[in-house]
Length: 449
Ligand code: PA5
Image (cartoon, rainbow, N blue to C red; front, side, top):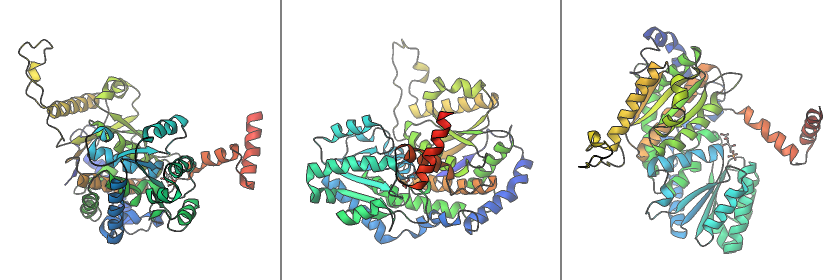
C-alpha cells in the first residue's frame, strides 16, 4: 500500500470506544458515497474514473504532451483553484519544487492566472521572451476572472509572437464539453481542447485532463498515477470496517477530534516537495467541509522549516489544532552527512547518517513534543514520491473527504461560499446586468453608512 495510517501517537486522545461510537456513521457515509445517494451525488464522477478512464482520451493527452514537449521549452499553465492546484502539486510531488531549475528534457512549467498580480504577468512575459512557448488554459466554467485575464494577455502575446495560425497550434484548452466563453473561443480559433467532465468538480479534478495534461508534459507517468488511484479505490471503497480501512479511519479521526473541540487540522510535510500537495489538500477539505458554520479549518506547515516559526504556537498556543503528518518512507536522495576530522561544528555525532534519517528523527521528536503539548498527531505514511503513490494518495484523500463531509452533515461537493466575493467584484468592476446593479446599490448603501 502506498498510503498507510499510523495512529500510534493518537492513543492519549482517542479511545477505542470513541472509534466504536462513530463507526456506524462513517460506514453509512461510505455507502452513501459509493452508492451515490447523498447530496451532491451528480459530482461523484471521480469515484470510478481511475478504473474507467477513456483509453482514447488518455492517448490524446499523452500525444498532446509529446507535441508540447517538442514545440516548446516553456509551458504556461493558466488556471486557478481546482484548475491549478492538483497539477502543480503533482509536478512538485514527483519532481520537487525546483522542477524548473533541474537539468531535464521537458519544458519548464509556470503556473499563471492564479492571482491578479500585474507583477506575476510582467515577470513571466520577461521570462518567456526569448523562449519557445506553449500554453494550456484550464477553466471548467470558462469565465473565471483570474485565468480569463491572464489568458487574454498571453493569447495576445502568443498571437503577436507566432501569428494567429501558429499560436493556435500552441494553445491547448481544458474546459467544459459544450458551454462557456472558452469553449466558444476554442471552437472559433481551432485550439486543441480537452474536456473537464460534467460530474467532477474542480477540487476533485486532478486525475482528469485538468491535471493530467500538464503533469504528462512534466514527464511524470500519468498511467502509473491513474493505476495508483485505481488501486486505492479497490483498497478503500469497498471495505466497511474502519479498523481495516485507513481511509475510513482517517475520516473517523477527523470527526472525533472535531466533535471533541478541535477546529483546525494542520497537514505537516517534512519535504518541500509536499508544500503544493498541502495547498491542494487545503482546497479539497476547505471547500468541501467549511459550510453552515461547520468543518475543520485546513492549515499546513512545511517542517522542519516552520518548526522555527510556527512550532512555538503549535506546541504551546491556543489548543485549537491537531496535526496530520506526511511521513515519506523512501526519499529521492540519500545524502549522507560527512565526517569532519576537525569536528569544529560538533556535528560528528551524526556523521554517516543520511539526511533522511535525521529528518525522520526530527519528525518523531516533534510528534512526541506536540503530543506532550496536548496536540493530537496522526501519521500518514507515504511509500515514496512516485507518480503511482501520488495517484494513490489523491484517491485516499478524496474518498476520505467525501466520507468525512457526509459524516459532518454537509454536501461535500458544492461551494456556495466561493460565489459571494465574485458577485461583489463583478458589481464593483461595472459588469452589466440587473443582478450586478442590485449588488452595486446594496454595496453603495453599506459603504455610505
Ligand atoms: O473547486 C472549485 O470549484 C473552484 O476552486 C474552481 O476550480 C475554481 O474557481 C476555478 O474554476 P474554473 O475551472 O471554472 O475556472
